[in-house]
Image 1 (cartoon, rainbow, N blue to C red):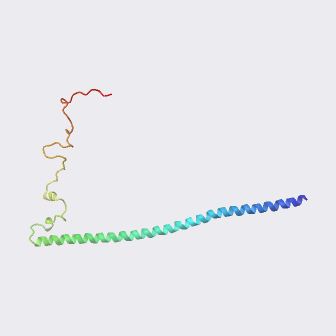
Image 2 (image 1 turned 180 degrees about the vertical axis):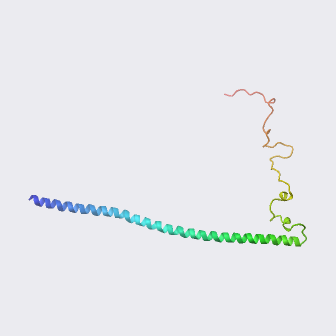
Image 3 (image 1 turned 120 degrees about the horizontal axis):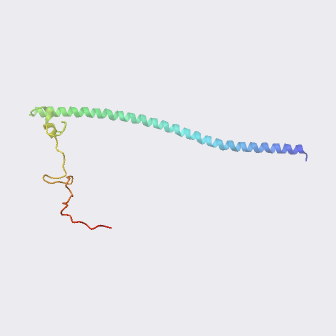
Length: 148
């Protein structure tokens, strides 16, 4: 065989091998590009869903705030109506002073007395929060032997 024929055969073989490797690389890289495109599409869909949920939440909160405002207005109207009815039925003094539910503060605070501090004991006893609770007289305690 001639050396020029071997050179041509070797060149054609290298060309075919290069084309094959190029096609394989393109296939592998194109697969990751397709999955990247699908991932971007899913991300865009999730962003649209999130925006729709935010809009729905804003609408819901607006509706709730309107309902709360209406409920407050109705409660105030009911309180004033009950005060007027109580006053017209023979109540003395200021009409709102007789309403225990709608008047502000506890009954003792309205009368001018300060509420007392809650205790964990009855009158004339120390209770568990007293400084002497659980202490014994030092004279009554016998010395204990050392523990090892």
